[in-house]
Image (tube, helix red, strand yellow):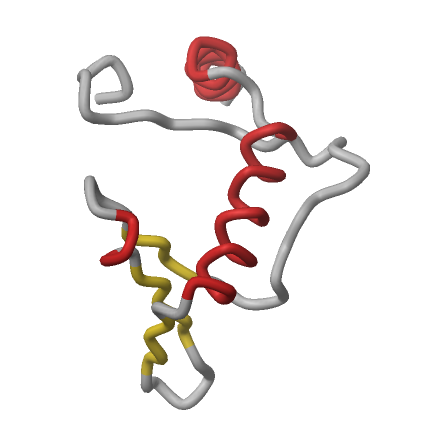
Length: 88
């Protein structure tokens, strides 16, 4: 699946010293019009919160950029996953 043109998998190794996080899970939905980007925050009580203010989006985009800089490339990630599966 990771070789499909619309699928990208990036692995962040556990050894990463400076793992960026916000302290909670979130989804960042982006599209061709940046003003329509939205962040969805998950909560402990089941409700979701949606953020769309520019400053909020900048914060979460920065977290994703830091995650991407810590992650293996798509090819390295695919090799990492393949190696892990082979070692089971």
